[in-house]
Length: 283
Ligand code: AMP
Ligand code: MN
Ligand code: MN
Ligand code: MN
Picture: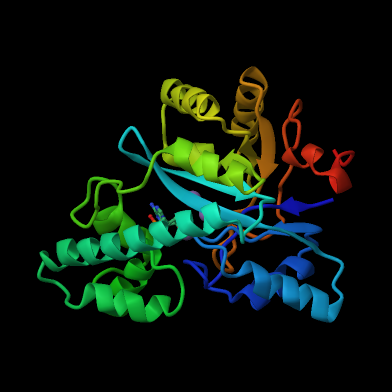
């Protein structure tokens, strides 16, 4: 069975609507899907309705990717299989939205200091529409204004940590995100541990801090992970008694990231779905 437990729609910085995302997941053979938009659960009900209306065989697990701060770095925690309507979660995500809006305005002011473009916040906001605004929308506005040629350049020159448009991580700590996921009945997963570009020593430090804060598992399978990285993550999961999750972190169709692709674990990983009665025996 294919579990893709990390992906994005237009409800945050993905480019497919929740409906299009679902159709693509079905097309790619995903059996169990979690939509994990940044700091919002707004797309989940839409996807579930689509599944129900069309009697699709795919199963949806509730999901969210929460932005947190650890050691001045943006660290992402994926929440899985929780109650999206739990009041503590609703309140937590409402606060994340406020932080996102304020941060986007501040990024806008900083990018405008280059004197290369104007109206950055409003331009990005128009692109985000009803969705949760993020740096991806600011990058798209920069492309639209011909300030950069592509998303990679927008981050590399202006939006990544330490660049002119970067706002120091304004997010709450990991523990608060893990706690709220638990309060709502779900599991907390350290997203894309290799994505933070940490040294081995720092990745271990992060894993220890995440575990100490109550974290349940780490993403040990992603579609671009090289086998040695999968083995490294499997070893970390075993050493710190963490479960494993798998997810593509799909944002838009491309040749390098695809829903459901290559989501296998290295040996020794206990999957997070071992806790979910329906899938407890799926390896
Ligand atoms: P935000 O949640 O607004 O801080 O934006 C984080 C998102 O920006 C990630 O989920 C990616 O979609 C994207 N992103 C972050 N870093 C990069 C990068 N170096 N290159 C391209 N996209 C990036
Ligand atoms: Mn994103
Ligand atoms: Mn992320
Ligand atoms: Mn993501």
